[in-house]
Each structure stands twice: as structure tokens, then as C-alpha cells.
Length: 309
Image (cartoon, rainbow, N blue to C red; front, side, top):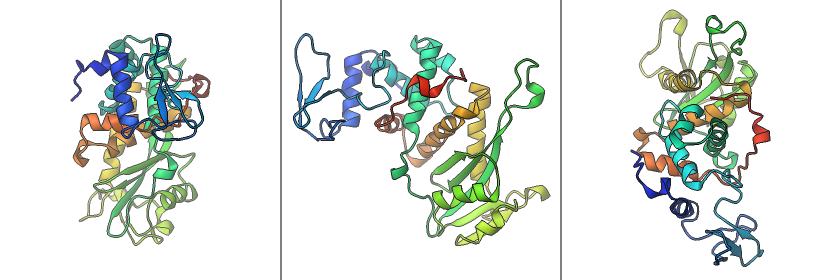
């Protein structure tokens, strides 16, 4: 539960102190040379709050330097509020709604949401394979996009785009937007994101036949024959993740361009990997997102705005 009366959502200085405690639990870390606890906090009437100077490289910095919050005119307390609201909305929150909730313009809220989604993206060096000996990984694919019958004659809905998900039962999900659903494309996702010591569960799609032999075991259910569960064989966990993703996109954003689809997939995956059933509370989920803001600068030009939800 989010306490909206918390000073960190109303006072920029309190928000900065909170962010420092999350990013620097053991003291300031220079974003320029990575020196730890080698900083002097600058004081003075003309000095902005939270400004440090590194004793090593002698460069000034604040807690937002080198993060998705850097050089933003949005007050830091509103950044925290946006982060908490986004990470605790299971089915997502549109930029229009967040703009109304925070008093920002829709344009600012949309760009802020994209930055926060960037913070939810796991760093490749920290994302080891899921699964392992004795564990089960479900692999499945879906298509995300609107239906042609719902398209306005002057605003056609973009074609559906494929997303592949690998879900460790009682564990994490890895989801990726792919160009197509072929054995080569899916295998590249599967063998790089899941341990081959895992038990693999899929449906009866022919593309899984060969790659299934690369894992400890492979079992499948035949959806075309109306089979969805056979003992421990099913891909219901992966389909549950897809249900959450589609509710987020259809219910809140309505349409997402292919350019930005992966960020929305990353958001859904982050929430799945930080869900309450894994013992992660609302505040901890938001704090985990805040810990991912470093080293992920995102400019407005890079987003090339083509989606406003």
C-alpha cells in the first residue's frame, strides 16, 4: 500500500534524501569515477541541495547524475510518486491518468513513464539464465495487438507483434518481443535465457521439437486437441503472464507501437518478477525500480514519440 501523505511525495528535499538512501545505502558513490565515500557535500546559499564533490576526480554530482532522472525539470518528489504509482498498478497506468494524478502535462508524464520503464529493464550482466537442475521452465508465445474489426477506418490498428516468454515456475519470467516466431528466433531466446538443465514445458508447436532435446526433459500439451493440463505438463503460468501483459496494453494503453513494445513488456516482466507472491511488498517493488535508474539515460529524441498512452 502506498501512503500518499508521505513527505517524499510532496517535498523535493525529502524525496532526494530518500533516493540517496536507496541508491547509496553505504554513502555517496561518484557516478564519474565510481569512488565510494570520497565526497564532500557542498554547502552555501547558491549551492543546490544534495550537491557533492568527489575528492578523487574533483567533479560535482548529485544522486540523479547518470540516471534516468538526470536533467529533468520534473520535481524529484513527483518522480518518486510516478515510480510508486507505476510499479504498484498491476494492470498498468496510462500517461493520461498519471498526468491527472500528478499535475504534469500528458507529454511530460508519457516521457517520464518511458524513463521509469527503462529503469525496470534488467541489466544484461545481472540477468543470468532462469531455471536449472530440477526446475521447470515454461516457454510460450503470443501476439500483442488490436483486432482489425476494432480499427477506425482512418486510424488502422498496427499488426499484431509476437512476444516470447519463458517462465520459471514459482520464479522469474523473461519476455522478449521478437521479429517472428520461427525455430531459429525462439531457440535464440530459449537457450540464452534458460538453463538447459531445466525441464522444458511447451505446447505442441513443431518449432519446439528439436530445441526440446537440448534440455533435461521436454513435455508438451496439445491445445489443438483441447488439452491444457496433463499432470504437471502445462504452460498455464506463461499464459497467466501473457494475460497480465494484454490487460495492461488493451485496458490502459489501448495500442502500443512496435518501437516501444519491448519497454511495456519489460514493465510487465518487472512486476511479475517483483510480485507479492514472491514476498515482495509494494514499497520494496518501487525501491527495486529506483535501484535500476542508474546508467540508463534516455533522451526524448531517442523515444521518438509515436505512442501517447
